[in-house]
Image (cartoon, rainbow, N blue to C red; front, side, top):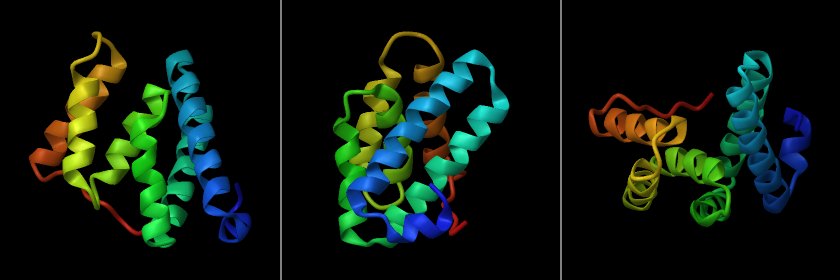
Length: 125
């Protein structure tokens, strides 16, 4: 989603773009396709910024993604929800960190560790 179109998008369209980017980012990461993963990260980040900028409606939409059927979406949503609803986000990250060994579990563990150490910061960009 281009920057101009993200401003015109509805919250549900932004959520759809966020979910798609999270899913495609994971697929690219697993394949080792770093250029594609980086492009999806940019799309994911843009959707997150726009949702955050939409106020309570956008934050609620991100929080609802903590219940998404795709664990990759939940991982990203939890990471982004830490900014404004840390208890909910930490609970989901802890669930993911108890999952089977692998990249998902490691990502959840590292996100929690960095958050709790005060090293995870949210920027406007």
